[in-house]
Image (cartoon, rainbow, N blue to C red):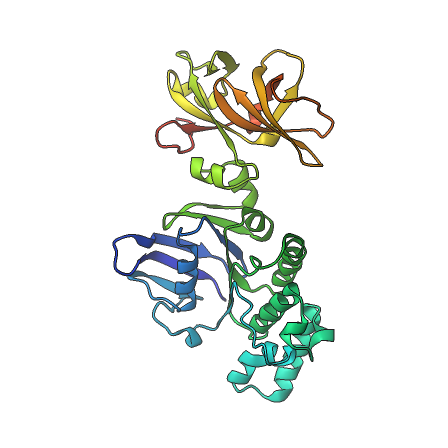
Length: 360
């Protein structure tokens, strides 16, 4: 079993009072693929390095399979790590690079050869075993780094932004391959990235981090569909979630956006006479050039054809939002269009704390 239990982990940056991780607790099930997602400086890489034993916490604990590994050296944790840089030996062939860890562990040559061949076949590196890294593409070099990690039969696989050095197309292709490989291996995996597309497509669960804390933990689609606060909604999604200033009427029956009155969902019945933030994704706003009941007017500011859709920047009651229209929709800057918010896709947040509202 390689379940991970992180309890109240605190790490303070050297020479300061700012915490890299601030009382972080996280449970990761055996075989789970968990993604640590967040902007630069949020503490995700520091958390990963403490898991690996490359940094020690100020307080808190880390257990793997029920065993406390908080202060064990890296070589005693039975973990493999893939770094952002390929970190391959440029003067050694691919075969040697993949088997390096096994050689250092003084494994028999037969075992090394067998595992190197297995990993090379899994990562489509068979024809390149006798090449030097300089003779490989960036994607192939990253495959070498992953192969070197998986041959170790580690309990836990750690990955620190392994795809960030690849160009967009390679990153997209390798992402799907990596997901299949990890699923087949059934190895507990912790993956760090700032790319929300990677997080949503790869992870069984996503832990969104901010200022050393976990802002939200959950299934990727749940995190995308129902952000716990404005930060999560604004960080995840391309474009990010729109947040529109609104108010609930005195009787709780209407949602007021500027001069427009919309029917308030039942959730807001107990928030009468309260200022709120209406959160809605760009794809959940229907657009039309003709008005119908319940529509909100908007002025088109920018039109961006995206191929499969048209991204519109629209001013609504003095606020700017993003709207995703069908590719056949025709409009131009300065035009008035009519917007309909999907009732089931509207999310509501406290105007002061920016936390999601719950029924009360």
